Length: 84
Length: 192
Image (cartoon, rainbow over all chains, first blue to last red; front, side):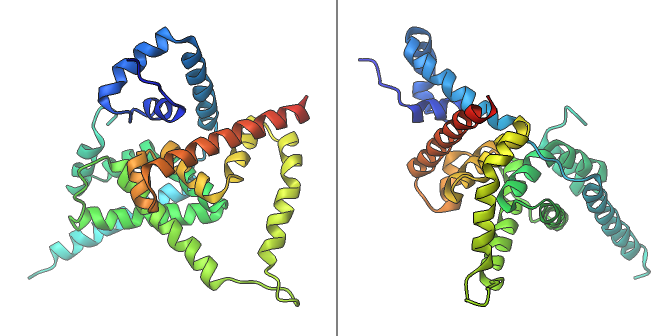
């Protein structure tokens, strides 16, 4: 008997989290069932629009982090160079 | 650096190779920063939390306390998320601005933001529209969307972090997507 796949199953499938036992079957059902495929395409459209949203930190933030990492490295080597 | 895995970059950084850290930042800055930004809704604050998150990660990695077996990005986002939540809790606890009647002024700001929402949809380009839709989601839904989509946490991890069942996390994601779809459909009516 064919398993009835829900939107939640499709969501898990999209993010690669569906139980391995059902993954291949769902892929096959998507080819066989046009309505299920339509439902999946709709879900992809909804999720894809999220990809448009992307924010980047400023270069200053990254420079500050790297300056911090470099200063810590410098401190460590200074401590190591101190006479015991 | 492009072909080196995150875990190998972590090891290189632990061996004092700072270029490895730079590469890790370069790879994951957008997903981590977007996740923080969408949760705090303030760029300047998001920059501070982003920097603080990496400083905390540098300490953990240098002290040899990193024993994450999973993905670096999941751990990095967890560090950023925890700092973000600490900040949000602090705000809720310590910052309460009231007017002469004792009403919380933040409630007025929320109303103002809602009133401007439609104007923003008309004026903004697609990215701005969708960003706004995500920001306007109910907190529980927004948290799941941000953690799943940008922070790349699994629904199981999200459930564990937010203290709900996997089914609840999945349900919130579905409601969020439905909400976004509905609002997009409504906004198109205005654009046309």
